[in-house]
Image (cartoon, rainbow, N blue to C red):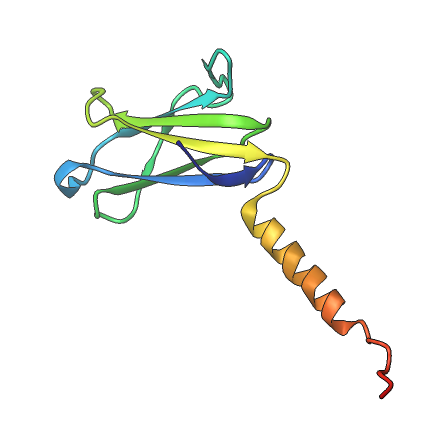
Length: 118
């Protein structure tokens, strides 16, 4: 199942925790475009993730250039420890929708109601 909705053109950050928090490892991410059929993104042949200090936690990012369900497969250099993560990408993201709703709500609240007569 895909994570929250992301926006086309906005970078998506992701992370990977090595087994037993091993540091100094080489962690690879493979980026797959939406399908059908799903296919590897040639813009990201293999992304090598960066380790956060010596914690065994590695981070990377990619910027989707089309809508759909993207897939990231992370693993150690030898192919072990594979995890798969999905990202739903559209024309907007959840945060921008929430911000717009707050803005609309504020505009509605600021509209003066007509005086009441008794």
